[in-house]
Amino acid sequence: MLWDDFLNSDYHDWRGGDRSEDRLDKAGWLDQWLGEHHLSVTGRPTEEEMAELKRFRAFLFDLVKRLVHGSEASRDDIRTLNKLLAGGPVVRQITGSAGGYRLETQHFSTPVEWPQVMAEIAASFADVLINGEISRIRICDNPDCLWVYYDNTRNRSKRFCDDKMCGNLMKVRRFRARKKSSEI
Image 1 (cartoon, rainbow, N blue to C red):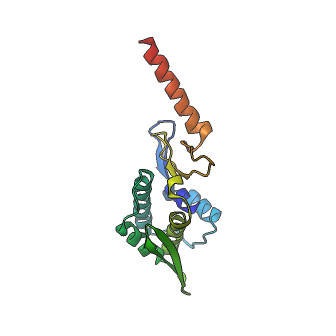
Image 2 (cartoon, rainbow, N blue to C red):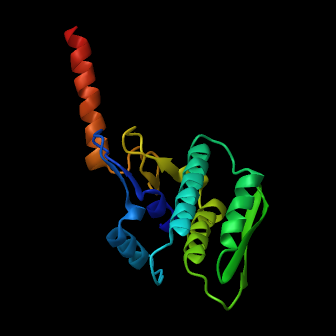
Image 3 (cartoon, rainbow, N blue to C red):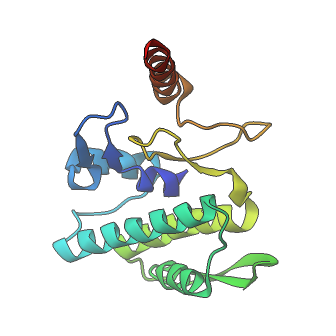
């Protein structure tokens, strides 16, 4: 999904190392990400646009953390998302309340570059907020990873972004901790 790929552009070494990187700053990664999501943007974001993209990512990650911990999106959250949704040639607005949101669309003809990208990310997240199951939004249980994903398993029990990487790593860590505590 567009929104979680955007959030995961803030990479943390899932193995627990000090390595982290902001992939939005990498032109190659940014081009690939835009291409994968069929977003055609001419030119690099300006410093101001890049700062706005990063503020948006921080806002969205904070909102996801609160949703994962059982909170609902606040009125301010919805206002912020609506402001972002209004940033392009297609204006979308979230209407309704926590009991039933819906997405309304109004079309305009003038394309806008980076604000439209943020509007598409916000629309992708709004779609999950409205049509998905918020309880399926997860943050990897590996405290070094922080990868955001949508749990599409039948029994909603997925705890790690990738069972072979983070899942195995955490299993080994638990095993070693048990072994160490039994040696004492």
